[in-house]
Image: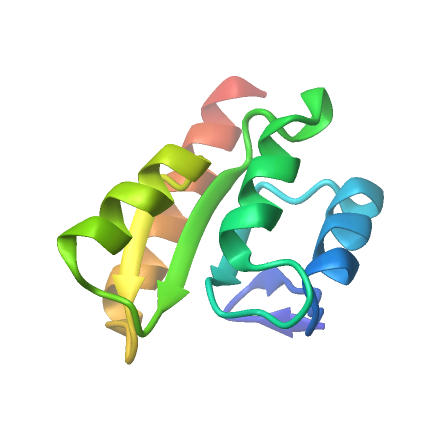
Length: 106
């Protein structure tokens, strides 16, 4: 599926996110912290343990916005912590920045 010019995959449960990411090898993962099964924090830790995903940009999309929540997401490996409803322009800017970085590395 294409969304705003980006190839998109979706999963609705933590273990499925890990499996999909290992297969698909995304550059960016938009991840809810409150997933069923493995939490988004647990998923982030597992993704960070995978060498093939070490450069993936993890973005927390969550209703949890306290300072402690932000600290936990950073510790788990997230590069960004966006509180829902996230600013779509901020999300698109992050995606554009990642795409530009990937293009420069090619």
